[in-house]
Every structure is written in C-alpha cells, then in structure tokens.
Image (cartoon, rainbow, N blue to C red; front, side):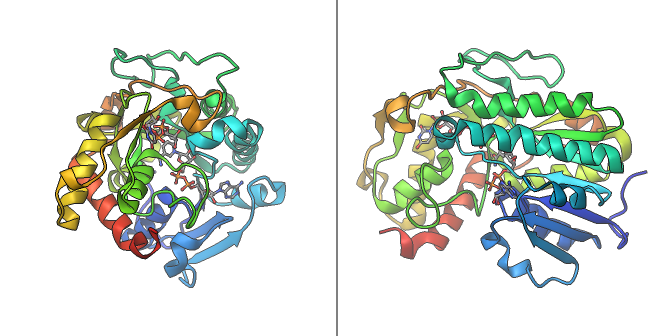
Amino acid sequence: MPLSFNDSSVTVAIVGCGGFIGSHLLDAVLCRTKWRVFGVDVDFYRIQHRLNDERCEFINADLADPRIVERIAQFPVVVNLAAICTPSRYMAEAPAVIRSNYDHPAALACACAKSGAWLIHFSTSEVYGRTLEDSGQLDEDKTGFVFGPVASSRWSYATAKLLAERFIAGLAGLCWTVVRPFNFVGPYMDFMPGVDGEGIPRVLANFSTALLRGESLKLVNGGKARRTFTSVFDAVDFMFALFASGDKGFSQAFNVGNPDNEVSIAELAERMRRIFARLKGVTVESLPAPEVVDGETFYGSGYDDSMRRLPSVEKAAKLLGFRAQVPLDVAVEESLTWFIGHYSNAAD
Ligand code: NAD
Ligand code: UGA
C-alpha cells in the first residue's frame, strides 16, 4: 500500500536529519505531509527552525549506540542518511569511515529486519568505483564495480557503502530500498573551512568558499574528472516519488542523478566563476584564475578518483515516474546565492 501523505498516524524516522540532505527532507516532509518525524543526529544547526515543531521528536544521539538503533527501528519508515561522507576524510580516518558506512547501517538493517520497518538507505554513486574517462552510463543492475588497490584508501568509503548495500540486499526479511545520490548540491551543503567545519568540503562548497575569500579555485589533477551535479530539490522529489510508490521501490537500488548536468570540474569552475561574478556585479577577469593542484598533495596520501559518473536514470523513471528536472546553472546559482548570503560576514 502506498503511504498516504494525509495520514497523520505515519511517523518517519530520519537518521542524519540535521545534515545537508536530511534538513531538506525534513522541511519537505513537514510541508508536504501530515506525518510525524523522529529525527536523530549529533548536529542540529541546519534545523534550528524545526526544533520546536510539535510533529517532531529529535534525539541527539549517535547511531553507534545499539539502544538508539532499536528505537529507530520501531518506526514504520526509516531513512538513513547518517554517514561520514567527505572525501578529505576517507584517507586519514579510514577505520571511522568504514564503521560509519558499514557497521552502523548493518546494525540498523538487522533491527529493521526484526521490526518490519522499511529501510531507505542512502548509499552513493561512488559504489561504481574507479570509473574511467570513457566509462559510459552507470546502470544499477548491469554495471560492475572496480576499485583501486588497498593503498588507495580513498576507496574506504565506497567499499564500505557497497558492502552495506550487499548486506542489506542479502538480509532475510528486510524491506529495503537503496538510494545512490550523484553529487547533490544546494543550500546548506557542507561548511566553510575555519568557520563551521574543518578540512576540505565537497567541491561546490570548496569552490564557493574560495570565491568568497577571493582565492583561486583548485583544480585537482587538472579538473578533468566529470560529475553530474543534481539539485537537492530534485533529490527530495525523488524521495516523495519513492514514498508514494507502494512496493515498487522495494528491493531496488536507484541512481538519483541528472545526466543532463554532466560537466568536468574545470567546466564547473568556469561556470561558478561566471555566476559568482554576475551575482557580485564584478567581471570574471577580476577573479583569480583557477590553479591546478596534485590530488595527493591536496587531499593526502591514498587519494584516487572516479573520472566519470554518468547515471542511467531509467529505473527510477520506469518504476517511480521520477526524472530530475533542475538544470545545472539553476542548481549552482541557488547554492552559490545561499552560500554568499550565509557566509558573507564570515569569509575573511
Ligand atoms: P551530511 O554530512 O550533510 O549529513 C549527514 C548527517 O549525519 C550529519 O548531520 C551528521 O551529523 C549525521 N551523522 C553522521 N554520523 C552520525 C552518527 N554516527 N550518528 C548520528 N548522526 C550522524 O551528508 P549529506 O550530504 O546530507 O549525505 C547524507 C547521506 O547521503 C550520506 O549517507 C552520504 O553518504 C549520502 N550521499 C550524499 C551525497 C551528496 O551529494 N550529498 C552523495 C552521495 C551519497
Ligand atoms: C563525493 C563524496 O564521496 C560523497 O559525498 C558522495 O557520496 C559522492 O560524491 C556522490 O555524490 O556520490 P566526489 O564527487 O569525488 O565524491 O567529491 P567532491 O569533493 O565533490 O569532488 C568532485 C571532484 O572535484 C573530484 O574530482 C575532486 O578531486 C575535485 N575537486 C574537489 C577539485 O578539483 N577541487 C576542489 O576544491 C574539490
């Protein structure tokens, strides 16, 4: 039976509700449905405006705690977004990354199998691994996976996510769906280093930071890698298509991405410079030129990369009637506008 958005007896558990995707999903659930939310996180800064909502119960707790896992699994729908998912951490903190992306989801999956909850687990487009410049469309049920050697610890995250997927798919009695996001972007993405986080955020936040600080954008290994950036608002619409789909989304992994938005990182840098210059009323020529940096120097020893991540999105279209809509320039401008507004006073 599809979930009714008007049914006020439904409670959805959102684990990682305070994160980038979680905060948008929380807002949308509260605006578009009559559901209640059981929200779990260790960080609530993005969702301050929701903390007193009478339809929400928030718990400041770590998914590593087995008592919390049991509690989460008591709700009929569990969305798991909690993870360490910043590439700069995959090398230096590989054991913690693996615990976060395999051990914790596996424990949650076992609890959901026992309780009968529907587990919607966020995996990643990185499960497709060390893709090459000429890799074609990545298909959920046909494409194989190749990772780098163990010394390339960049793959700690992707291998843990993939093992979690295999564990979930193999667990008897579990009702599950796996979501593989392709580089979501939007307001509230990541952090500004030195202001509300440390290390290197994902590329859109890192380029936005550099633009605000008047620094050059760093093109890792020349910026030849390609990504298909996807608006977080499309991602939320995907979740609503999934919620409404009844059992069509059960026992399936879905790519969630926008193949029309494919660019190289060097092209992304040019677009962001152009959009930023327009928003600030300056010329592109007045901004510092991008600078090429070596991947291991920038991120640390063990860094490696996927060169192309182009999703096939036919399964989500066929089973759920969903296709991403937001063009790249619109998604980038929404993100950059928010970043400028949010961090202008903190940039120096
Ligand atoms: P995020 O870091 O903004 O959000 C994750 C949230 O989980 C954070 O608020 C964090 O505090 C919380 N969290 C982490 N570990 C926790 C724990 N042990 N207990 C409780 N809370 C914990 O990340 P995001 O971009 O919103 O991504 C959400 C999920 O989607 C992750 O699983 C990530 O791997 C996956 N994903 C995201 C993208 C993307 O483009 N944003 C792409 C691929 C996969
Ligand atoms: C990311 C993260 O692993 C996860 O958050 C997520 O699961 C995954 O994307 C996904 O979307 O599925 P990646 O795309 O490599 O992986 O991370 P970014 O930091 O966004 O980097 C994208 C590309 O830009 C990489 O080639 C990186 O080397 C490059 N980059 C990054 C730069 O050239 N300059 C920068 O300043 C930052």
